[in-house]
Length: 227
View 1: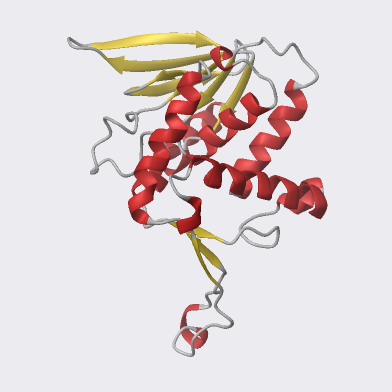
View 2: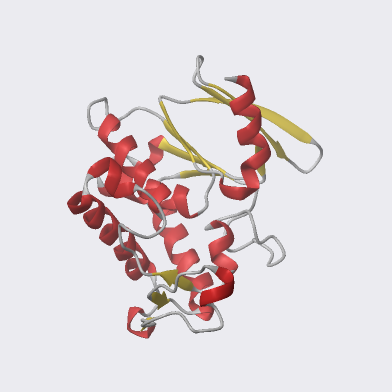
């Protein structure tokens, strides 16, 4: 979550200073990518200027055995837990933007969940007071307050969120694997499979948001080695 908010905050800060009609490419349609796209649209960016590239499928066609790619990433087929969002848990957002701004951004991210949830009244909350004795001495784990979105609501929430982005004009490239990114030429190269064979495509961008998650580890390493 903290990574999502970091991307959203810094990308928006840059975009507001530039032409709002520039082309934005988002690599990855997981939680990071769709939060970023929604935030951009809410801030006045034209959805038709946003392209999201993902190796998986949309929430209507995504098979349940593809747990790490596709719309909403691993979260779409998870057990529906959403760890309580606070600037001291899960990252260093407050270090970069201050606690007040961090709390504001965290609340915005949670509002997206409620906004697209089929029935927000069904969201439950648990707040463990302390770690059980069987955990403390062995695992060095920290219990955290948790919202329970509901496993049976996740898929419908994903469809509602996807429909929102489609209706705002966001372009999606499904079954498309990014092969390389050229930062100097501001170009993303990816392949998608049509009914016959693989087709290679190059797309230009003015602003790039990179949010592949765990499924993009190999690509990320390739880009790190390149640059």
